[in-house]
Length: 310
Image (cartoon, rainbow, N blue to C red; front, side):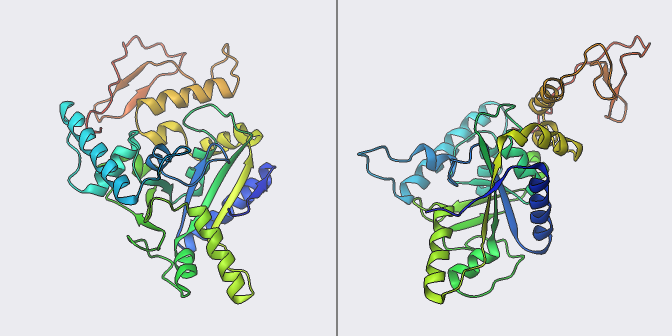
């Protein structure tokens, strides 16, 4: 059982729907998530890894939490070997580890539908293999109201806000990616819970009990993959690129790949933004970049990655 998706085939429809979600987010508590393949479920990385194979016994929630704790413990050990200590707060440490590839029970969301769309369109991988991608919008207040049968504050964003999941908004000051991506996390209250199936079941139950349809608390946009290149270009115009989302040199490399390969540059003609890597750090720490036609003979200095982040 799943929520019926809205199929999006045209750029105009896509931006009308995303802009509408952005307007709704300003008025109520909405969080957003993008999937590079519309077949993927709303499950965390650790949940997917420990999903039982045919004939295996399913994991219980306590065992899943124990596996997550062990993963974080070993991750912290290796981080210390690199001279980097994880935050003391558990949720902050888990969020940081999640953003660097550790599978946890957390599921990444964003407060921005545009950031979530960037994830859906494969903005970090540069590869689009699925015919359709997904953008999800979840109303925490509407979900809680559907579960309890009563209204809740539209601005509430606290642990145990819903029966099927926790919504976590850990401190961001030690996680630049989380700041850039306007990130929040959900965490399942039970390992077997799938958000989409849970919501679909609640809406069906509400309709049977009341004879009326419930206000949707989960929106699923199923987007034609052919819109990818044009949509990513528009997001880049909005300042949503790999380098702004990742805040590191990996993001800079991905941004360079997207700009050069996706726009089919005429390499014989300089553009306003494709200039040689003649960069030097100015006295105030900013980056002074010279155009290809610059006559300066100043040798470039190395650009080093900030070592303060794991």
